[in-house]
Length: 79
Image 1 (cartoon, rainbow, N blue to C red):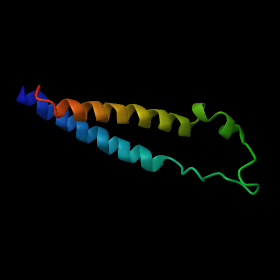
Image 2 (cartoon, one colour):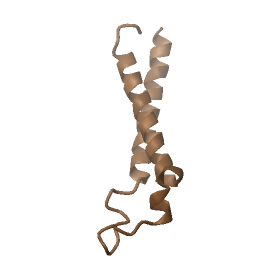
Image 3 (cartoon, helix red, strand yellow):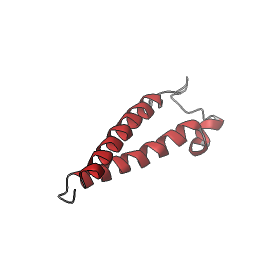
Image 4 (cartoon, rainbow, N blue to C red):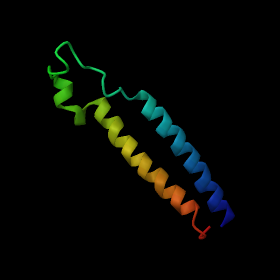
């Protein structure tokens, strides 16, 4: 059981490092605001879900869920 706990702790650390890197790769919310207060929509703005930025947002949400579940699992008395 102790080996599984150590493996889960290592996975938690790796997931947290990946989350940090992905968050740093994302653009800020104000990035891309143009001359007319962001009223001009670009192709990538309309299709954000299929762009690299949309993929990073989805991956961040999934990894944060995994991080949360691992943290809760490691803090229970099961291991």
